[in-house]
Length: 380
Image (tube, rainbow, N blue to C red; front, side, top):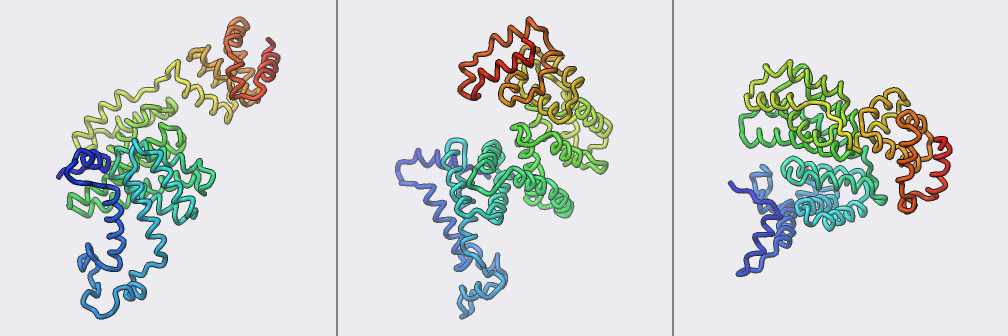
């Protein structure tokens, strides 16, 4: 069976001139029918509701108002359908417009219950529409940074963590079924959540500590082939911006190496054998992200020996420039000693002279005064 996404269907419909086709209108009408189905069954009939009183003289609407299918708040159903419709339409080409629609819905219904509805619908897309994972990550970022929506990164990351923990329930479901469709759904819920977490990490919205908790949970003593596959999928994604420490990478590499013979699935075994060879700690001398990771770590630990040792293995001019920018922006004096330990007076003067203060003045208020203060602290 061929399955087309909304963007492809819209593209195809635009090439048909014989009929006037409005896909968005069709979607709205279809969802309205689904909503009405709760009261006047069209799709469900007796298959969905085994004891639905089709032949009863009693009013269907009254039945819903007084029975277990009662809807306490019809507005909740509308919000759910509006969010579903918007997420179904979301693509890279219309991202800004659809994001604004979703923001409007959430602003007008700014409660934790509605945010939970949104996250539920979002994960349905994460699981089964993985081509747009980057757009879903961007959407989460835009929501938790929106001043008019009562949402923060902790809420979304906690929801992700809960979905990750739900994988144990999905694994139980897998063990109890031989139905191909149910197997596919449960696996996609497990792997899709992992893939989304990986995308959050490479965008640096999720830190090393959370990522390590996720991987540690995967690489337990009772690992299944699905856990190994999940680890493989996660590592392939995070490898684009892997910020884990060398000893942590070595630990995971050893766990995989020691247990690889226990894997039943030959395909996964081959994939992991290849991956293990690539699991090396690589430091790019021109990697600004790595330098900034070291800076953040130093702010927490104040471990002078460690940061100097790390930076000496990198391109010194680039490191010094980043440290100077940090001092100009934050005025902490935290990196004065680090700078002086990493370079000599001649090289430091050369780097300082290369800085364009006029350009920096746009982003850093009073930068020229701060720059003079910094030079005094550096004894220049």
